Length: 174
Image (cartoon, rainbow, N blue to C red):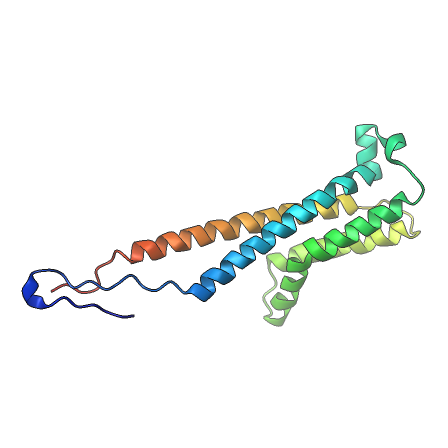
């Protein structure tokens, strides 16, 4: 940290200049926030047709006859694959990191949940007897992306505020 000293005879305090914000960390944080925001909005847009194509949701809304068509399950699978791969990517990447560090945590939990839902639902889409859980997969990813985006944004704002506050601290006084 660099110090600027005012000569002792001036009667003024010698103040340290505000610590330089680590630009690289700040820019990386902003990029991560933007990435989560983008993944959230794209996944959310894709979730709407996933919901409308899901048999359980169709039954709840009484829309089964309106949205049923030949190949609808394959379209549901395709849309869900995009949400799983694109929206779920941070969690799938996170599980690898957590396993390498031998510290399973939230990313592991989310990645396992979405992978099991995706694998089982894909098997059902291609002939296994059961119900698909694609809409649960998509909404879980949406909620987790939103939560991480808001958390990262809050942490970044708090960090910036603390850095600003630290800039007002007197490091030396004469």
